[in-house]
Amino acid sequence: MGQPDVEVRKLDDGLYQVEVNGFDYFDTAKGEPVSGSKNKIAMWSLDTDYGERSLFPHQVFFPMTSNGEGWEKLNKDIRTELDESLLGQFQGTATLPFAAGENRKVAVKIVDDRGIEPLKIVVLN
Image (tube, rainbow, N blue to C red; front, top):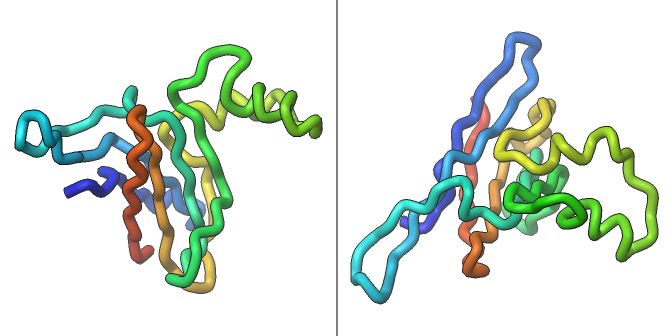
């Protein structure tokens, strides 16, 4: 309950890819568990080498954003240079391919449209 629903795929080249399919949460008004869909995820991040001490996001996504929000707004706010050709890849629910880290664990943390922040840890095969 409350964890992101994630799928971890090992690609043919040995790299991995994670996709977030949604999340579950307890609706206190209804008194029952509810499944949240991908379109209710405001932001999510992936730690590709989770060491169980702290979360270090290696990839960060803003799936609910429209033009001028998410990474585009962050780019403007912090006055830094981002490769704008890559920004579209960080608006979805599937990661870019990555190599397994030394700890062979990944951590997926989402922030839903209500500000709830569930976390899921997955051991890589």
